[in-house]
Length: 341
Image (tube, rainbow, N blue to C red; front, side, top):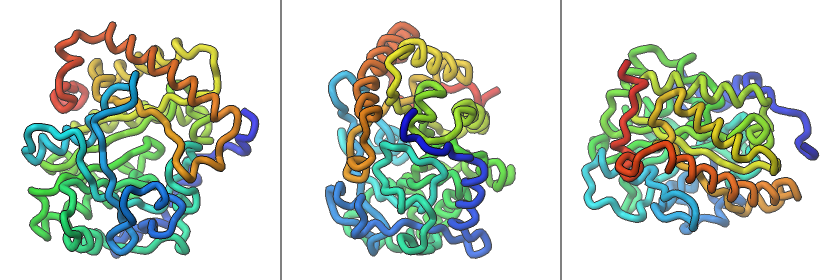
C-alpha cells in the first residue's frame, strides 16, 4: 500500500517502549499530558486531573447500521449494581504514553504514543487515584487506555491496589484496553498476579482487533502481516485465564475485493477460540478526529466506505450464526467456555 513506509517490528519496538514507559521498581507508569494536546480539541470537557486525565462519555447508541455498543457500560453496571442500564455513562480516562503500533485512525496524536517525556509524566497508581478521588462528580469507571496499556500489565494490578487502599474498589469499576500487540501480560506477571486479575470483582478487559484480515490489519496498524495472527494467539491465552473479557474490531480496509470472505473468515476465527465470542465483540465505526485529519489519503478515505460494506456482512453473519435469544442477551450474559475447560 502506497505511503505505508517501513513496517513496524512489533516485538522490538514494544520492548524498547516498555523500557521507557514503566518503572517497575517504583511502580510508576508514564502517563500522557493531555492538556493543550491536539487530542484535547475533541474533548467534550477540558482535560482534568491536573491535565493528565479526561472524562469520556461512552454511548450505547451508534450510527445507523452499526450494532449498539454496550462497552464498558454493561459490564460496569453489572459489577457495581446499576439498574436500569443507562444510555450514556462517563469514565475517567488515563492514557499510558506508549504504543508500538501507529493506527492511522487513532484519535491520539502520535507524539503521545512515543514515550516522550516532553509530553508525559511519571505517576504511581496511588497518585492517579488521588487525583481521581479529588475530582468533583467523579465517574464510577476508570478506563486505563493509551497508548497501549498491555505494554505495562502491572499498571492494572497497581491500580487495583491503589483503589483498595483508598476504599474505592467496591464503588469504582476498572476497565482496561488491550490492542493484542504483545504478550507482556504473560511475560511479566506470574500466576499469582494473573489470578488477582481474574478474581478482582470490579474489573474487565477489552481487546481490539485491528482489521478483519492480514491486509486490512497491516494497512490499519503499519505492523507486519504476521502480527494479525498473533492477535488470535494472544486472545486465546486471555480467554483461557477466565477473565471477564470483551472485544472490539475495526473494519477499515482500502481493498474492495474479498470483503465478505474476509469478514466471514474473521468471525470463523473468533468462533474457533470460543463459539460465542463474536457476540462479545463490538465493531467500531471509524470516525475522523482532529489528529486523524492530516493523516488522510485516498486509500484511507476509501477504507471508510469499505467499513460500511464490512459491517453489513458482519450483521448478516451474526444473524445467521446465532439465534435471536442469544443475540438479544446482555453482552455480560453471553457465556464463554474457553476459561472453563
